[in-house]
Image (cartoon, rainbow, N blue to C red; front, side, top):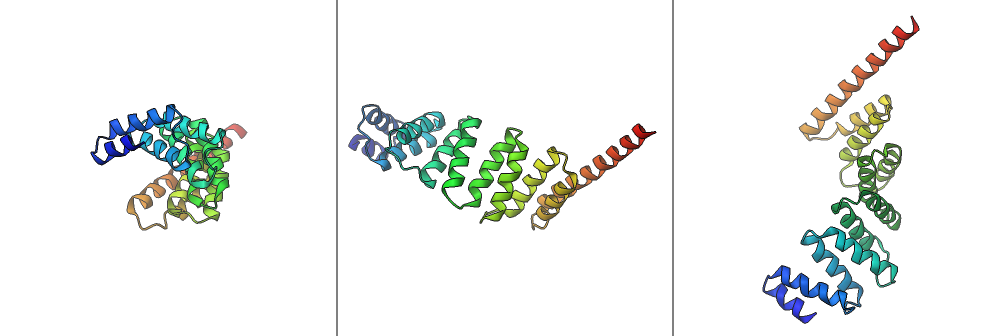
Length: 197
């Protein structure tokens, strides 16, 4: 442990991580903050799957409290490792552990990335009920998921809400989606009319 600290001071992060990980493998990391620090170091060195494994083991062995902060670290590790199913489960646990709309937003994004739009819509709506940092972004991505489900009117409403933001790129993207939805609705009406005749 002391060796890992010395390496950190000398900015030899790779050696510090190696020493820290060796201490973990030998069972020397017994305190919660040590496990969290190891996981954070693994993430900073872009070894997210190993970080997730360390955290999961610590949760299972009751060496790590399943609080919002620790669960969020786990969710971030799975997200970075592109293990999307486990990321979704971890974001779901994180969202339930605290009343933070941003956790629901991250859950919704993970679900949408896996084309689970119905679940994503629910999570986006949960994010909007709570305190979320970027309300326009949540509305925008809610609109995208609703659009993927063919819920044109609801998607249009979501894009209109998102377009209230001051960001000109956001406004432009929302206008483009609203125009696209209008053309899709028109195309569907024309197709329906053709089939009826």
